[in-house]
Every structure is written in structure tokens, then in C-alpha cells.
Length: 106
Length: 124
Image 1 (cartoon, one colour):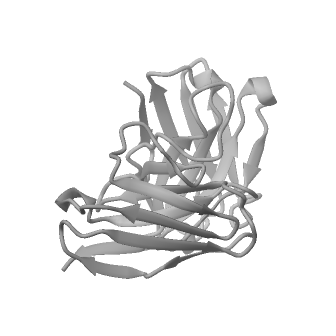
Image 2 (cartoon, rainbow over the protein chains, first blue to last red):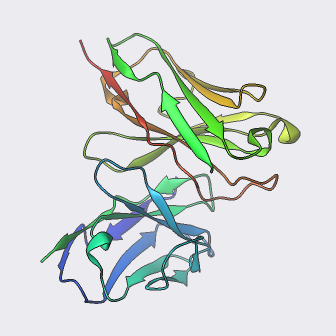
């Protein structure tokens, strides 16, 4: 099973800042990685697939990069609605999710 | 509007059974590979299993923790996905989400959209 490790587990940031979330895979994924946002009491929402392609309707302030085993999700100019938990998911070999990064308001 | 609506969750004793349903609308359900993902309280996301479209054989795949206990099925005439859960354990307590590997005849590896989820609590 491919293990996905996200860091940090929790991040305290201020609105307007730029933040980078990390996701590491235990083996190479090529670009078979997706990112999701989940707010309390809601279902996950797809943000990024193919490591760097934004899903329909996702603002340009969300960007993904990386390949192989190291991936990042960058959110620029943080808005109040961006404070949530973010998960990465690999689909190179079945499906596994990272443990999530919780982004809190500083 | 694409919509997935889960139902059937509730409280069940260890060793018991429960069947979840997911009603789909707004897309051609028969084309979609459908998936169940669960989330234990306060925890992360875990893939449970999937069923391919009948065009692709209609076969199922399961995660190791639920294999031989859970069964995924679909009724394309009713646009509904099912998850039959048997021999339930306390560690199966979670919100169960229905989602898809894409809405076209060509499946993708990511999941979109998602239903709102239904809570299953396994406790005596």
C-alpha cells in the first residue's frame, strides 16, 4: 500500500497570506495525485487532479505542483473560506489519502 | 445539477448488518464507476471500495479492512448505488460517502462529486 504523509498536521495562518502544504508518497506516483478541501460537517471537495490541474470552478489562487513522491498545494491570498482541512490522495496504485493538514486562522 | 444522496445510516450493534444507499441524479449513472469512501469521527478519509460500470464489467474491488464483509452493488434502472455491510465492527463507525471516478464513460482516478455522507455507528 502506498502511504501518503502530509505536513504539517496543523497550520496557523492569517488571511491574505500565501501558504504551502506538503504531501509525500512512499513510492513514485508520477502525477497521479489529487487534492481535496473539507470544511466541518461537509463532504470533501475536489481542488486539484493530475498534481497540478484545477478542478472546475476552483479559484486560481489554488495551485498544485510536484511529481514522483513530493507534491505541494499552494494557496495564495488566503480567504476566510479557505480555512479547512486539506487532503492529498494518490491514484497511481489503488487509492490512499494523506492524514490531512488543518489550516486554522492565526 | 449533479447530486448524490446517501441514506441508510444509523446505530447498529457489533456483528450486525446495515445497507446504505446512494441515489444519483443529474448524470448518466450507468456510465459511472461508483465508489464508497469513509471517514471515522475526527479522522481522515479511507477508500472502501468501488464498482465499475457494466460496460466495464460491473466488477467490484474492496479495501482490505472490509473485504469479505462489505458488498457494493448498483441498480442502474434506479440510479442507485448500494453498500451492504455485514459483520460490522466498532472500527467501521464512520461517515460513509458516495462518490464517483468521473461522470463520463472513461473513469478517472480522482473522486468528484461527493454526496453529503451518512453516519454509521457500530456500538453496543
